[in-house]
Image (cartoon, rainbow, N blue to C red; front, side):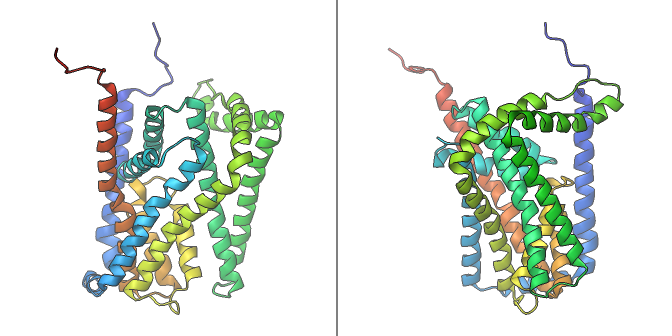
Amino acid sequence: MVQPDPAAPSRSLIRRRLAVRILLAVVVVGIIYFGLLPKLVDVGEVWATLRAMTWLELVSLSAAAVWNLGSYLLPQLVALPGLTFRQAVLESHTSTAVGNLLPAGQAVALGVTYRFYSSFGFDRPAITLSLLVQGVWNNFIKLGMPVVALGLLVLTRRATGDLTPVAIVGVAVLAVALTGFALSLSSERRAWRIGAALAAAAGLPRRLAGRAAQPPWPEAAVRFRALAISLLGRRWHWLSLTTLISHLSLFLVLLLALRHVGVADSEVSWVEALAAFALVRLLSAVPITPGGLGVVELGLAAALVLAGGDKAEVVAAVLVFRVLTFLLPIPIGAVTYWLWRRAEGRREVPAGAGVTG
């Protein structure tokens, strides 16, 4: 008989944590949407700005949003050899919808991705490698974009000298991350040491609580190194390109929304928009609300208004951007989940079932 892990949280504790997360998310969203945003801008002016958009602007924005959703598939197809386009569509849109709906949704979305990949016939090592490599590359891009954007702001003299130290810190963080990843791949011994150091850091709260268990990350780091070298040796350039395209496709939707509601380049340049986009995405990585709901809107609106944009136009652009990138994937994800469940049900029916002689 398998004994339960005494260190594992009970179901009641998990439910309480989930309830706290949901309550916190509701409170944060309520404060932002019903408290802060109405003080930032007049809702009537925002609505008038939205109604002034032409059908051509709406069509081009919709096309950019569709392309953005399609770009999510590209890194997956590179990081998991053998994954078909149809399988990537079903998994990507379903996990995106889950990530946008649930508190700590990104963690749950990883579980959804694992379940989908398993149902497609991929084994655990291939799935784990794909998820880890995609996660690492995504984080590199997330760390690198603010650095690049701040550097461009300083070079184009769109920023004050106060941002120079921020750019330097960003470069240092990115350099440390890249160096750590390169060292983990350079030798088995280094991979083991880095895994042990990360495990010790992650296990510190457990040790302080009197629990000796520690994650088996050193062994996992060595296995990851061997698999990653095999995959990245052939596909690192394609993975880098597709991940960058995916992030820039999301930014394109924001930039088009700004221009289509009337925020000119003279008010907010594309470099300033990129800086706001990159910094807010980095800050919203902390899962306070599902998909950063409320936090992203307030952060983007504040940053773009500070850059020189008209309040009503900026808020209108941010709301359009979030409808197309946060809300739109939810119904699409519901459809792809239904299609996947339907296909799974067909596979589970034994051959000849329902056939009478």
